[in-house]
Amino acid sequence: MKIELDTIYGRIVDHLRNGTTDAAAGVLEVPAHHFTDPGHLARELAVFRRLPLAVATSREIPDSGSFVTRDILGIPLLIVRQKDGGVGVFRNMCRHRGGKVEQEEKGRKPFFVCAYHGWSFARDGSLRGIPFDEQYGAFDRGCRNLFAVEAEERHGLIWARLEASEDGGVADFLGEADERLAAYGIDGLTVFMEQKIDLAINWKLVMDGAIDVLHPQFLHAEGVGKLIQTGAAVWLDLGRHGQSYSARKRLARKLKAGEPIEAGWRYLTGNLMIFPNMSVIPTPDHLEHWTVWPHLTDPGRCHVHIRFLTDPERLTDEVAARINRSWEILRQAATEEDFPMEEMIQANAAAMPGADFLYGANEVPTQHLHIQMARELAALG
Ligand code: FES
Ligand SMILES: [Fe+2]
Image (cartoon, rainbow, N blue to C red):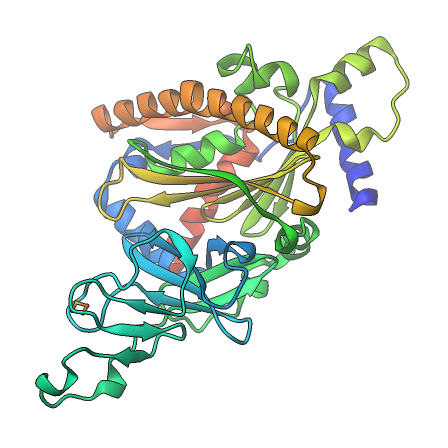
């Protein structure tokens, strides 16, 4: 990766010197109703359900019986580490009459008991016991295991596919992004902190905000905008996915002053965008990991899950203090600036769905999501 970072660094330096940025072929106009139309959302959800989606990190369920529960696109899931080290993903739905078999967000259990009438299920999802079994009458107990969801663990993430598909596995899905994700070593990282937020915003606007390289100077003038250079970015098209690189402002200042620069790639910040809803931003001390989940029926709502992942072996008090400061910068930028702006955009889209939003040629990272979603929707038929 180092060699390649040197190349990207060279491209960024050219941009900084020339006042240029990587560009798309032209502008893109996205209809405002793509953010407000329930029919459009339903088609997007059909795309989501066919793709492997990162629903948890491997180290969230370290030991046999460790579990997390998640509601993914309206589907309650139970994600459990198996005895053999594999992973089981099940619908968190009791096969008696539909209660959740696990109500905690995370933990470790030898088996799962539904709170309603006490049916219990083993870690592998099989029906384990029924209180008052002899009173229930005749039915096939072997057909009452938890519903399994197709899942695969790769690069420290647990990927679930909500609808069975003929398509290849996660490696196929990631394509050119596969080795980039591997390089972040997520399998060695634990959750340092996380936040789950429900927002009155279409999911794509939050994704746009996470990769928008043209706004820090304006919306975050007193914060991130002072650290990251606006309007000089490199975009790597990775097929379905993509990665954008920007420079730290310190690099622009050093260039201008004609100061010598060593290991220039250290002044880059990259954002790996895994279609449709995941963003990974590496920093020296932690990895920032976002997933953005559409609401099941309301295009004007989404659920955001932000995690800071870190290497527990390197977690000194000093490192922890630095990560806490980064979290505070992100929290301030996201909750006080990005999300309020995106809520305004959502309200305007709802008030005028016949309008369109313009993504300039200089906004190639934000164009990508909309272009790729259009391709996936076309492939749905
Ligand atoms: S609904 Fe779970 S035991 Fe009855
Ligand atoms: Fe922002």
